[in-house]
Amino acid sequence: MKFIFVSGGVVSGLGKGITAASIGLLLKSRGIAVTNVKIDMYLNVDAGTIRPQEHGEVFVCADGIETDQDLGNYERFLDEDLKRENYMTTGQVYLSVIQKERAFKYKGEDVEAIPHVTDEIISRIKKAGKVHDAKVVIVELGGTVGEYQNSIFFEASRILKLKQPKDVIQVHVSYLPVIKSLGELKSKPAQQSVRLLNSMGIQPDILIARSEKEIDERRKERLSLFCNLSKEDIISNPDLPNIYRVPLFLDKQRIAERIIKKLGLKGKKKKLKKWVEFVDKWENPKGKIRVAVVGKYFATGDFTLSDAYLCVNEALKHAAAANEVGVEQVCITTDQIAKEGVKILKGYQAIIVPQGWGTRGVEEKLKVVQYARENKVPYLGLCFGMQMAVIEFARNVCKLENANSEEVDPKTKYKVVHVMPDQKEYLKKHQYGGTIRLGAWPCSIKKNTKLFEIYKDDLVQERHRHRYEVNNEFREQLEKAGMVICGTSPDGKLVEAIELPKDVHPFFVGTQFHPEYISRPLRPHPIFVELIRVAKKFS
Image (tube, rainbow, N blue to C red; front, top):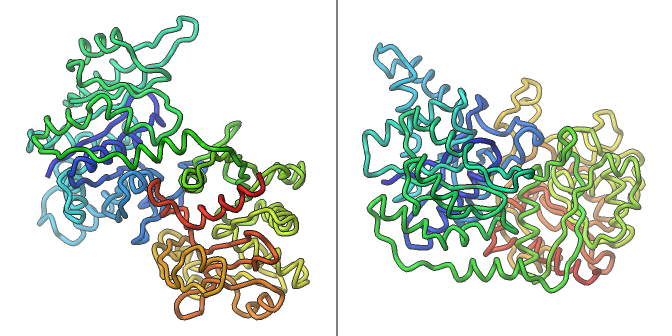
């Protein structure tokens, strides 16, 4: 088994995850079995209890692990399902070491950061490779070099390379800023970043130069001289029109060949034709549509955080390419709806209300749903967005005054959405982490419905992340009023999807599950594909 550690320097948010995912795609395209691992430095056991504004979207794997959003990028680029072994946090590592100490697994030794914590890290990395039968494990180290919090993971990578020198390479992603008053790229921050690595006993084998524009030969020469690298091992990675072009740009610089040679691997002839076709379709659309994504996790201080709904954004891109159109995805906050009303939704060809938690913004979301339903604008409600669709329908069509979710208003007379029975004990005991309905579950699709036309199957697997559900006491009332329960759990007890008939609305679908989690560039999710297809008619 071989290992590639991808680290970052100068600033966070450089795109280490996209770099790691791109390397995985390029090696896989040459017939090499790979898997990706993300290491996050925080003490949380997983990402499930972290606010989206704090760390971006939470991504859920098929086995139910709540992870960093980079796992979603890995799955999209590799077109493979990852597992809990592909995700690691400081919290997981230390919890495991402490549990082993309590169980006398260390047989009376002093338990220390080195070797016990570093051994735990290395064993977890190797386990990820084993469960995927991978020849190469690509490990992304969260944060930037020089941070106190992630130093133990850098130390683990150093130790692994010391023990297996021919099996480990270090890829460092660093930033070259442009000083506008000077008009040139400056390489000193990247040089200092590499020196920090050197001070930890680590010499990068490949340096990825992130920048606004492609680095020139002069910058490569300076980086080569001061970072102790050959020019061929300095790879330019400038800002590009979209993330899916990154692997193609890196491939032109033969990064895969450099890695294969350094690790002593044998690669086959690359197969990237379908990926190239996808990128070309996305970058050369025949027309454009506008989609409003109405959520409440966009704002972080004075900035907008689109990563809060990253999977939705990407699923729209995949579906747009499949329909050979461009998509302008606009983030609209519930605060904007409160201030300006639903009139700001005019001019959009589709509306999405994605996931959410708590009471804030609920009334605004309900107004958005009503606008989409009454004006026949293609609508997709995801998880909380489906629950909002049910509540709006109950209030305005079934005339159940002030109908609501138990989560939002526990005292409402009409709890058309309520807490799942097995979740009540968890809530009482404040057991929030990892206790909700998570991971892939089967969904039975009702025949002769819009959803059945979309899937062309009566049983599908979709990923979930929720603890509230449609209250079965109101199902008959909702259906009599015209709502179609088009998806349920196989036993019929849980409502998994709703829709309005085609003669009532061109596209009005809500899913308790998250189809965006499993949309891939080369396998776009059919629900999003159909949403865009219908939306094209309104452009």
